[in-house]
Length: 239
Ligand code: ZN
Ligand code: FE
Image 1 (cartoon, rainbow, N blue to C red):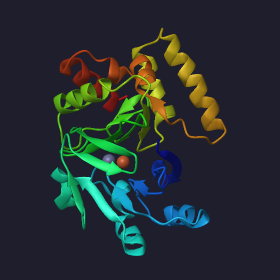
Image 2: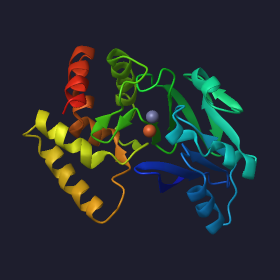
Image 3: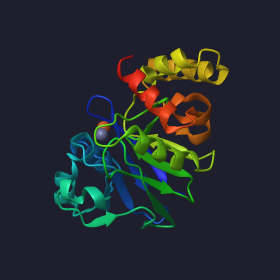
């Protein structure tokens, strides 16, 4: 099993420090370096890998400083390797990234960007979804189509229900209103919103969520077709 520590950065991003049982460390989507360095130093750790889900600055701007300080290897989507500096390991759909006892299965999830990936640690039952699947939401379509994003969501839907989901931003509270507007009588959604309000009132992350909870509560996970998904995405843009 990998161990996950949530590190809040920037305005509403999360970067995740993961450790394998045999002591390897990796950081997912470091949008800045200093909060990561603080956590590593407080725990007497160094950094072996930097994992990027996609090329946006709020997920990669800490790469260079962390690589420079720890000589960590940058692991990134092959299709975005030119948009990310100094990539050491470029990964495609179906590739595996070995990490101690576990390995991340690479799932290409275009939509938010053209070549973004999710890291699915199968043994641990954990997926890092970047800006593709959010709790109660989905990423904006900057480089891909709704069709692309729908297909990416289908890949994530196919993961085991109990898979823990760690996404790139704390957007859950903001996303809740749109889901509720489209799905007024869903008791699971209402219960989730109450839980989210409590967590945020105590400044706690609303993550991880699970694939099962998202299937029950996230309106984008409920879409049955690319057309339905596209209509939802358009409504959300002007909500
Ligand atoms: Zn992004
Ligand atoms: Fe982002």
